[in-house]
Image 1 (tube, rainbow, N blue to C red):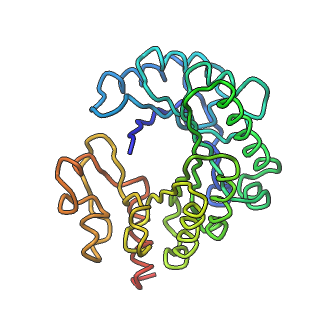
Image 2: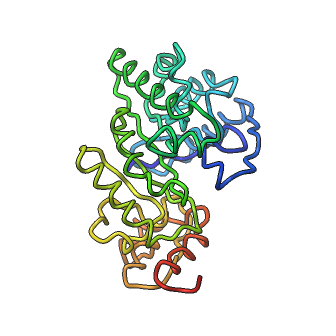
Amino acid sequence: MLVFERVAIGSGHGIRCTRCHPDNESPVYHPAAQVLAAVQAVVDTWHGGPGPNVTLTGPEPFAHPELPGMVAGAIDAGVHRLRLEVDGGAFARPGNAEGALGAGVRHVQVTLLGGTEGVHDALAGGPGAFDAATTGMAALDDAIRTAGVAAIVTVLVPVCRHNVADLPAAVGAAVQAGAASVLLRLEDGGIDLEAAAPWITAACDTGVVNGVWVEVEGVPFCVLPAYDLHLASTVRATGGAKPAAVCHACPLDRVCSGGPEGASAETMSAFAPPAGAERLAQAVSRSRGGAR
């Protein structure tokens, strides 16, 4: 698995469920010089392995007035793989896909909140978002083919109680739009994992049937029997942070919480809990019949 270090281009977030986050703050973008200083720090301290790799994260990057200069500056700084986290809509506008590829972007991750216009647009908070995302992905795919460059487009689906039943459709939409892989990231610590598991499993099946890799982040191995090869653990590599246990409820927790018993100490030493790990642990407890 390629490791990408995340560099925020501003405060705030990209597209996410407006029902989970009704008071989403307005984005404030950092100056390009500040972003590039953070990128340079990643390059200078890269921990080894293929890279350096950087994801420009935070609010929608195409709304940043200095995006072209930041992309070019990151490539000049020595970033081998530069990924943009986007809502996809910007690529539907003429020139944006070609411009991004020409500047050196080779990895793009598009966020889908659902697999249909009704679900995605309702959770995104406005009409037209789903059509813009899928049209933008198609435009980027066309630009990649025309330019003849080795670039990859993936999809992120932030999983919450409001879209869990639409996960198979979301994977299907990602496949149809040309995504190379799909990441289902659990972001709702209050979700009922027992009820969510069949939908997550069906989403993995949708990927298998269509030949597209589906990875699951934030769900313990034991919640989805026989799908451990699809699961990222409840912890993620974060550059040297200490491992932390999550739920202590079964023998597999030594693996899925990043404990060194499940892998070599060298492999697991760079793992730490994701954002909201405490809430996720509570969700695990509830799914196993613990206190509600």
